[in-house]
Image (cartoon, rainbow, N blue to C red; front, side, top):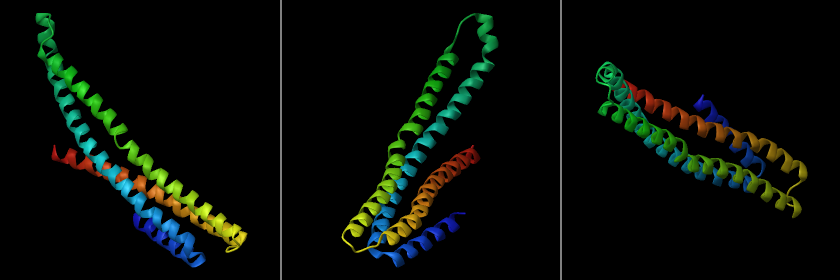
Length: 177
């Protein structure tokens, strides 16, 4: 799947270079910037995913300890340190889950922004070439229609890699336990 997506991106990029090298260069400039943004997003997501998994394990252990101590709590009529540990573990897990959603969001948003801005830049440059008489309207329309799948595939591929790396990290942490 990923190899096919990369091959499709390469084929579309070669076709765009064949049609109009100047506009294809604007497309080519977008790809490394988007790759950098998704790379940082992946690293931040994985760092926060590790923290979330650790806090999830602590919460499960504290919950199990609390459940095992319910009979003792009922007999003595007081809440011990097990409830405090459970509450602390639940608070840590809550903050970890919030951070895994919010911390990488800026970089994921930047990834999408770079790709969308690259498409807009390409269209604006194409319109400039059209107004200067260096390109025909048919040529610009064909180029834009052929470039759109490249941008969509780049977005899909970036998000797929992010989710795949997150899933792989979670699976490896589960196997370690």
